[in-house]
Length: 206
Ligand SMILES: [Zn+2]
Image 1: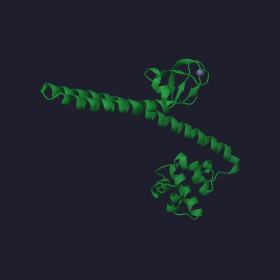
Image 2: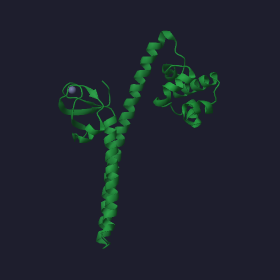
Image 3: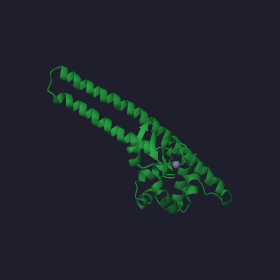
Image 4: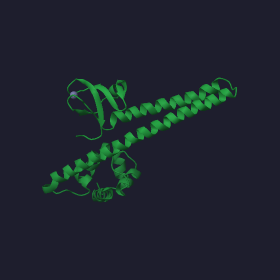
């Protein structure tokens, strides 16, 4: 998707409807800064406002994603291109999230150990007991926070694949957090066939 082309198209359609950036922003309930960022190609409209935006600009979502009014004869091809590209964009974003999970996990464990080391040094210096527990508690709290965040990433990034029937799905946070796991492979019940299996994580839909 060509973000700057889409931006120019949004600006052109907004002007055609006789609206300023401010007016469009107000009607969408967002800031005019956000509109300005779309129009200069620095960001894309969020999926939550996309339909409403297209309604106001009197275009289809397909037109918006192409950055031009799509003619009827190649409408289907362009729709498919856009869909494919969105799937690819989601896969890339999911891969990034999963690497972020690894990096933040490592940093978090290092921080926890550092805090335990700090507490231990205080203890050997004959400081009161709370001087040990405060840094250790700080380390533990951040570790738990990062772990919960990592779990959320594992839930939403990509899909779990049922080992029995091959069904791909995004599980609930509850089933991910309760499941036994080895690395990212989790023992869960498939919502499609109802059988339990060790389900692998996959970023691709196929
Ligand atoms: Zn299944």
